[in-house]
Length: 87
Image 1 (cartoon, one colour):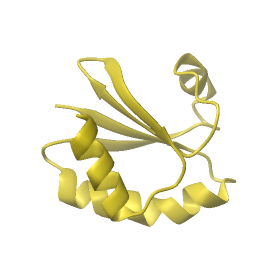
Image 2 (cartoon, rainbow, N blue to C red):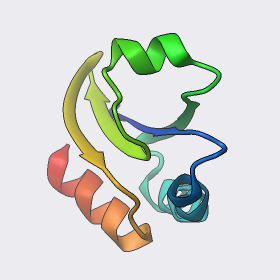
Image 3 (cartoon, helix red, strand yellow):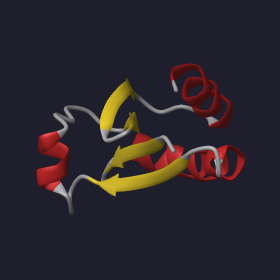
Image 4 (cartoon, rainbow, N blue to C red):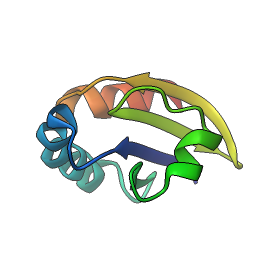
């Protein structure tokens, strides 16, 4: 099952604005996809491992490998379209 990860931080305004859209997209996309959030402040090593340079950044992983990445806030429809077209 593809994993969709939202890399975010609590101090990031666009991240906070996108949070409800990401949660709503999760309701529409699951169970075909698993959507999770990674707080880059709490998981700095994970953010560094995946070379996250700006937030919010959404990445899709399949079989443990990153297959797509998008930086910047999106609305619900944008998240759904992007995930469907990149997985």
